[in-house]
Image 1: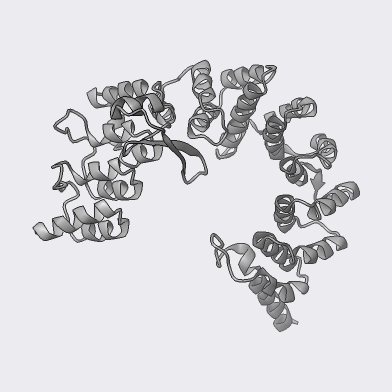
Image 2: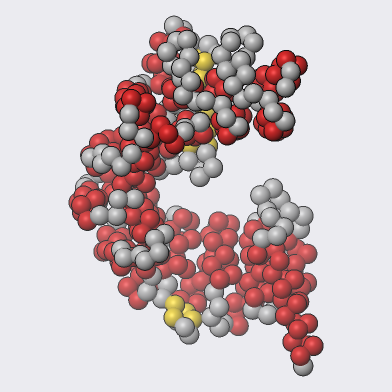
Length: 418
């Protein structure tokens, strides 16, 4: 491509137009084209703008994230400096994981960055004393890190999350206490630093980590118990993702802890863990949580109830019907989602599902209609229109939104066969 095409790529990168960047790269534009104003590769421009989609497109098209720049850095090192784990991983090449000087340089840089104070570092880089702007940046998993801005420069506080994930990918066994210490610098379950530590420990699936987390779960500090519960839940989930899970019965170890836990945040995590092994042991706990003041706790109750091939017991069914009429819309949505998957008998279930087709939340209405359809309840046809025009995030081809079509097809097949 000519100079004009290179200029168009630079302009698209500067605008953050990922679609046009992709089109130009597909047409043969040089992904390592220099940005005219700095002479640096356009990848550096995307990184400085924290533009993950554009940076990722450039690397996928062949831009070199390990290219040594005049100041001795590389685009990858600059992405790591930026404090956004997603951005750094978007430009991270697999070759950087191989033993050698590049890997050691990255690991050393990540360790030094993990302990910086982002605000102090931002002030050092800018030399400015003014107020720092703060905003959350969320990743695809729902986790977030904070973006701090001063004097036109932006710095994230996710450096420790990147280090933790890097160590895990390199199979380095960072001590439990060190990962805990990192998590406690960002004491929020949804912060990327906390989540990275929790996930790294949960992925180990070994007795030593389970024992350390269990001991921590007896600490009087609810924040430490929360981290312990998170690690144990992560272990259960990681084990369930294996072809032959071996640790699922350990979820029942949460039961006595949950029965005595008074911190709502910790209790919510423990109940989540118990949903992986619900049964007679968890049924009583579920019933006890039915009137809990926190909707997060009530919303987990259906998953805790004892349910066999004959369905729920009468008291369990009564609990679910009560939750379907809960004053909190989130509890109703969770309960309706559960009823969509519940195949047990209960004439009253159809009636409460019809009620839920009038709910304020579209997802609840969609689940209710789908549940009626799967029960071959003809009221699903008239109720389908109550779902309404699809809101953002609703997929017209998703199972709940095609359930009535499948119901009508089953009815037609049965009629044709009869």
